[in-house]
Image (tube, rainbow, N blue to C red; front, side, top):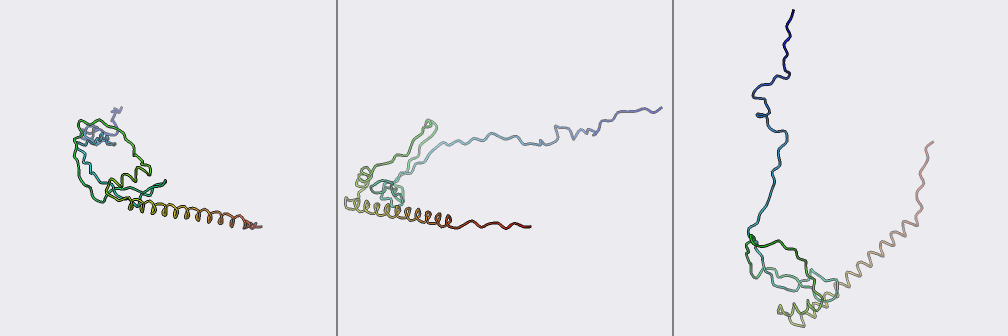
Amino acid sequence: MMSVTSVAWPPLLSWKTHEFLPRLTKQRREKRVFFTTATTYIFPLEYGGSAVPSDHGPPIGLAKTHSRQECNALDYMPPRSSRVRKFNHVERMLLLQEASYTRREVARFCFETIAIQRSRRETLDDDEEEEENDNEDHEDKEPKQKRLRV
């Protein structure tokens, strides 16, 4: 009579136990970022030709270089939300005058802005006309009929 001994398959070797094998999936570490200081660059206001407002009045922008900078510690500052403030045309004119522009210069800025706005409106009107003409051209053409294979 033969004796049958049970053998575990696959054989477990001490160096192949789960303690020695690398994990199949890496545990993700929780990532956090902390800031201790904030540096704020202060720019003076200037005439900003690239920021043409949708209403009347001169565009205002920031100077090319900052006039000063401030460093603040963030450890005691509570988080806060804020919104961008939009100025009406009278406020923009006053801000430019306070930034040492003359009334004549501010008036010239206003006329330039009006010319830019007019040019943009004309471009939009031209684009709309072209779209209408393209749509009419496509409607006039009869759709091609497909040939049937016999």
